[in-house]
Amino acid sequence: MVEKVSRNFFLFLSHNRLISSGAKKWGLKFGASQVVAGVAIEEMIESLKELNQKGLVCTVDHLGEYVQSKEEALESTAMAIQTLEAIAASGVSSHMSVKLTQLGLDINAEFCLENMKKIVRVAKKHDIFMRIDMEDYTRCQKTLDILAELRKDYENIGTVIQAYLHRAEKDVDELQDLSLRLVKGAYKERATVAYQEKEKVDENYFNIIKKHLLNGKYTAIASHDHHIIKKVKAFAKENNIPKSQFEFQMLYGMRTEMQQSIADEGYTMRVYVPFGKDWYGYFMRRLAERPQNVKFALRGLFSN
Ligand code: FAD
Image: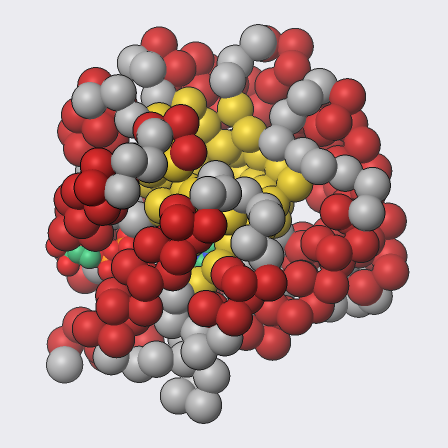
């Protein structure tokens, strides 16, 4: 009960545009620096180098979402390209993740597609894989439509399927020839489109993971849930699925010891590394996911 209220509270706060735009001027606050790798590109590159040295690979996210003006969307596009150039120049091992609402999806889908094309073209030049994060349900089909357009010209691209959505299994079937990141889902969704009970979400999550692994396509299991991780390892072993066909992913700053031990066991462990001044919505979603995360936010109040 407390968990549900806390989740709804932080998800509600994550949408507050006023605080979000104010937060861009504050720098990282309330302990956000524990889950966000700095504001500037240079700070993020340093974090990537440290992670790579420990045997962890990465995917970088230049934070931002729900952009309302073309000017901001173009700025985000330019920043994504700068990020790709910095990854290539520094020689770190990293993919890049993007959110389409940061690139103008809510303004005009065609405009957003053009921005994505500019980014994916640069990523291709540097042989960097691009992952389109999945946002809330109202943007899901639009995201998949843009992905379909991009796939006509590019192969270095994939997306995310959220297990809480009723449509997840069908989407995994339709995208069975694509590299997919599979997650439980981070947004507040209606019961008409998404499972509300944790047990149902977990069950559907493991189902779609098994399905995509058996399809033989690359599967990124993005979860901090040790039960799921254990089950995936056992399932892969039983079905002779090689370690080269899947990877685990976790968020920067979360379960870092487990990240290291998974990498040490010889699995690919990819850390999702967010950076940038637009940290507020991302940080609120992390607080929503796990009440314990609020503890480090409170500690952070006194340290930065
Ligand atoms: P949970 O269901 O939160 O936790 C299950 C159990 O694991 C907990 O009960 C606890 O026992 C243990 N546990 C979890 N976290 C911790 C911790 N920090 N420390 C100790 N124990 C812990 N969502 C989207 O909607 N779209 C996306 O594009 C997207 N991309 C993602 C990318 C990555 C790399 C990751 C890791 C997540 C992403 N998510 C995304 C978020 C995802 O949908 C979930 O909201 C989030 O990962 C929480 O679910 P979980 O599977 O980690 O485990």
